[in-house]
Length: 151
Image 1: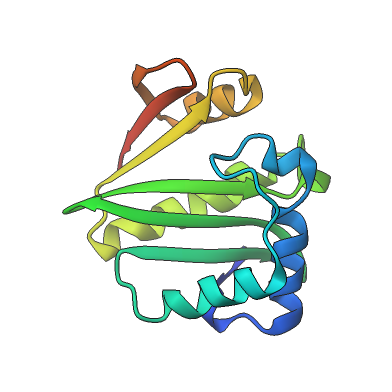
Image 2: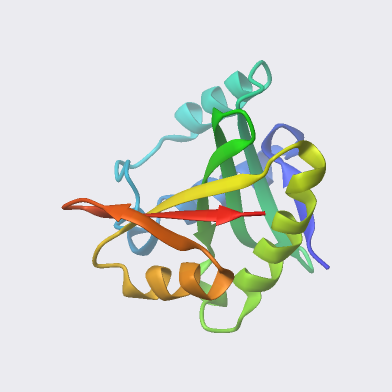
């Protein structure tokens, strides 16, 4: 079982840990926004989440180790786009699939019926991961493959 913490409930050390992981070159290269984020920028962003109902950000822990982050942005009623970061030290161990399935199993209780995701065309590991989780390709463009998962 994984501990899922809303970003707004994380302490300063947890936020520093989240930011360090997010700013790793191995993580940023797959992101839409590849810029380094400052600590002040991150904390200001998190503070802004307090007043938003269309964005959800979570830190995922196992045995007090940050194993990843998960975020959701509302696109329409019941449809959300998700972003995910898996801690590189956990890759290849099946952990990400376990904690994401735990999160996915809880989302229908929140009225979420569809999860969209986009993956860079050259991120083969992530493409395989999405297919394994049950996401289906909906379309693609020059940069991304777009996926959909119906809960």
